[in-house]
Image (cartoon, rainbow, N blue to C red; front, side):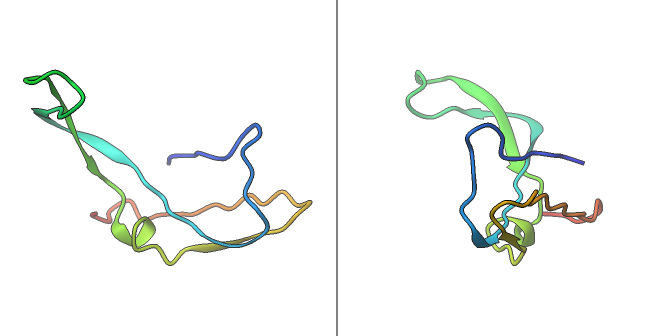
Length: 82
């Protein structure tokens, strides 16, 4: 389980919000870094490991209420593929 939250001065405004959960993993391959890195620079390839239905096509929603804890947990299936 990955647990990330807004901390410090980061605050969401009140109201209904769409939740997008993202995560990436290394593939074990090296790929060109692209600009602004120097030509020939290689980096580890990373791919999205959370299914699109939880990030760019998310239908997950929460309501942020002023003066409340506003902790929201999302149990994602571990066998889902992106």
